[in-house]
Length: 457
Image 1 (cartoon, helix red, strand yellow):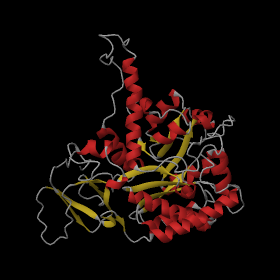
Image 2 (cartoon, rainbow, N blue to C red):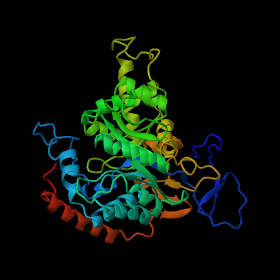
Image 3 (cartoon, one colour):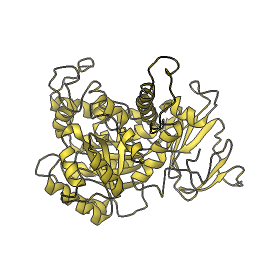
Image 4 (cartoon, rainbow, N blue to C red):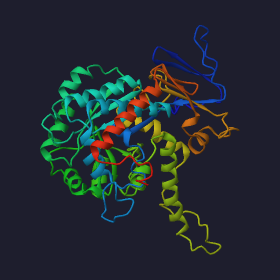
């Protein structure tokens, strides 16, 4: 399944890799001197792309299983702990560089294990240059393709955001042909002076700009101002906006016309009260999202959950819309959709969101996102003989509706095998887990949270 219409799909075919690139895709490729991976019974497709994941928060996995974005004052199990107050305002302030490193490294390896060959690490932990370097080193050491999001830190004197981007570009990102690339965080909510400067630096360096857009956080007036041209920055094709929940119709239209992209985190937006994932608005405007996992404090980060959540939420909303066009009394109990009703998402749609669109939104579509000759070999092999899939009747259907991370058998990034027959390579997971647990213990104590396995659920 190439995800490239010009290449097509094949029931049986070969993919030829030389070095880090795909050089041919098709049946019966003559390459007698090549090493062979026997992928019979496996689905061969591009690796998945996650356009928004806070990797530094890996130590707080499932701590906010019930948690909301903000404490809503209800006193319910969902109001405490809450993300803004207790993760960003609590745990994040306690991170040392070594905590940043092990959290980002372990989280990135876990995503590789799930078939995510490319991720945007929305790294909001830049309390000092040492924190920043630790985050980048973790992505390099993990061996996946990553876009490093240089976002803000807290208010301590050692923060060098956004000016440190110049050093990062020279020290870490001097080549355009490397696995880890740079994205600038350009959050509007941290103040005009900061976001104007960060957008200016990003455009000087020629890198993408990413920012959260969440109406329930109080961001809508800021976004309306920017969209209407009364702010001090302009939106363009280099902008990736995350969530876009609760935004005005005018802002949506203006951002669409400016060529901006949108990453939707379907599970998190539904669970944490960001607002309804804006897929119907994007369909209305002729736009398509990429998919992102956001925070493992509250939900798993695997691409199968993201695709199923996107498809289920959209179809739930549209199916109910159609049913409400009748009156539940035969013969109008199951009406034909009225003109103008949004099209139901299909498995091919959400697969495109999770591969092709993700690569485009990160500016990496020339290198990844499809199995296309000339692109880097970012490939996953999914086991279609497994108990939860066999017998195979539909490749796109099986990937989206049946599979989970256990079906990810082999992962290749830029021609290098990172996971082989179900086992991660070049990673001592026992040692890394112990280091992550040590970091977790420190962070819980520093943030004043009891380590009680049943308290926060």
